[in-house]
Amino acid sequence: MEQKETKKTPLFIQVKPEDNVAIAIHDLEEGIEVLPGIFTRTPIPQAHKIALRKIGKGEAVIRYGVVLGYAKEEILAGAWINEYMLVLPESPALDDLPYGTHLVPPDELPMPPVHTFMGYSNGEGYAGTRNLLGIMTSVQCVAGVARAAVERIKKELLPKYPYVEDVVAITHSYGCGVAIKAPMADIPIRSLKNIMRHPNFGGEIMVLGLGCEKLTYEYLLDKEEITPENCITIQDCHGQDEMMKQILQMADQKLQRLNGRRREKLPLSKLMVGMQCGGSDAFSGLTANPSAGYAADMLVRGGATVLFSEVTEVRDGVHLLAARCVDRQVRDRLAKEMQWYDDYLADGGVDRDANPTPGNKKGGLANIVEKAMGSIAKSGTAPIKEVIGPGQQPSKHGLIFCATPASDLVCGPSQLAAGIGLQVFMTGRGTPYGLEIAPVIKVCSRTEMKEHWFDMIDISAGEIATGEKTIEEVGTEIFHYIIDVASGRKRPYSDQYGFHNDLCIFNPAPIT
Image 1 (cartoon, rainbow, N blue to C red):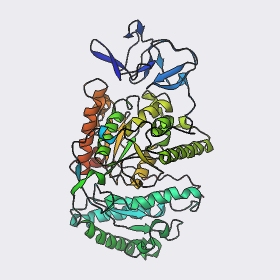
Image 2: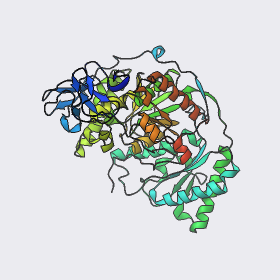
Image 3: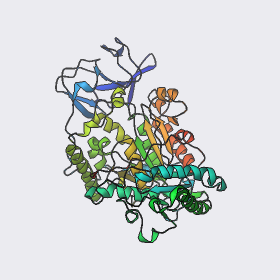
Image 4: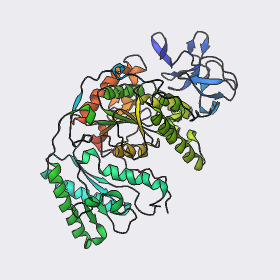
């Protein structure tokens, strides 16, 4: 990554020497000399692309050493390049992707500064980073009851149990009015079943059902778990008072057991961390995401498991990911998940370029190819050990690709279902996004974003763009913050303010 500067003030960043475009580090006025004899032809907004030479009609526009698209018309040197000027290239083919050709040996990954954290042990499974009582709902119809009950539990019961950090109502829009036996219904069902068993809930199961929904207890629980100690059917309760009395009595029993949990020193192999980005801009792939990727490599080297996701935001880099798959089986699963999503989008009458948002484009991302090249940087360089579908849990440790939609609101719950103890979330435009079940660490790509949201962004990677810090320095800072949050020593801003999003479960199956 090369920074170009005039009078010690960096003007733009060119990722690779073969790139014929670069991005502006700050807003540039018309007439600024960016290279000898090349002047900006118009004002160029921060993070947007500058043509470093003349690009002919139909010629490739290259950033990251990758073809972002083809010029619709001739583009002069010094011109501003935006999304309206490019023709999207074909996505990479999924047949016979090379695999295992770029496997970084474990001892070449960066060494983590520490190899332990203070978490809540769950025996053989992944450890918790928080100690919570989770109350699952089987259908949206009882969401209001669950939320009202949680408020009473927090007020009347929680003060008696100082070692339980919070009570969470797991509400969602699934459960009824759905094709419960459709082939794709297994995605939302397994997602909810696995979220109920999240490491932060300490193995305690509490389900509120209505009594007439399609998502009956049998879909969520094993036969031996369907007991009066775990399940309350609202339609069987004689009025509101009895309903609340039963819920609080059950919760009290669960809280007593959870209150016995204590943090203990555990190896990083007990920690699972999710990587996600949202509200991305053209700096995301240069600062925030690579820094998170460096932290991910440290975690993997230390024995932790790291998930990255968002199918449409890796689709155009699938060949790069295949090269990091440890074997043919993992490569084949990666290609299968990509093909499923290609077909899913096609059935909906769109393609992968439906992904970028107005905010992405305002932040300099011209199309999904450019967004994808930056997005995959958060996965670091470690080998990909396994590919899982949305709502599934990994069977291996190390770097895992979890094939989820790119939507922040849907990806987050899918990673929760996989068992992440916390999430690192990179943003360029800014979002107050958060998860109630697991902490979310917010990393921004621009110094201006941190200055603007000084009390909502946890870590800024913006100084990488100006040369004041390195990816390694910020990546190490992120790693330390992950350990502190996982150990309960620090709370991200989203948790401090209670900025928690609704639980949006991915459901590609029909709604009846």
